[in-house]
Image (cartoon, rainbow, N blue to C red; front, side):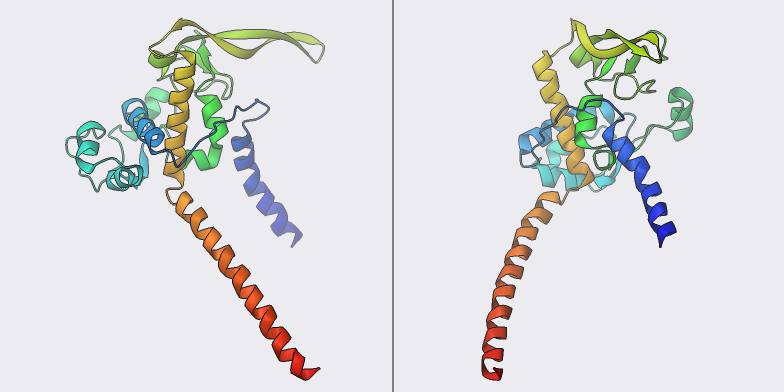
Length: 246
């Protein structure tokens, strides 16, 4: 029994570490899965900036379109860039895994479940934590994910973030630590607009990881209500039965 418990915790630990994002402070994403406009904007950002490398291969274009309120013809016309794709296809991409491994060091992961594995707050913080670092292959690094192998694909929207350093004493020695970023050259969006865009993207990724979350929560209230009513009926029946016995 003890070995089984230890084994279970050893499996859970990597996921909890990844979701927590180490010792980095995580900003609140404050997602709203009921906001269809946000989900639609998030889908647009994902398909335009992320889908070239990352897939959501456990989702279908048709399911996404129906769930977040996009007409299927508009989905195919504006958000599906593969001319051979059909509305019922899975949302894969055309980048060869071997080539992607050479370009990025490892093939870009599928993002269908990334919000469930990492957590929405981690994603929201991560996408706002890139900074310029000429020593890295793509010229950027990330506070939340140090030495990240991914380029800052949203740089055109955010601008060029420069690192903000703070001197900290570690083991008796002074080290310059990146504690934040400051955009030196603005992109297409203001800081507030960029934060909202990232929130929309994270909102869409949360939906992708659990498309029936809202339905499940709504059903849960009905189940709880049934159990409460059933419990009351059982208690009344018990009293009625035992009244004759006593």
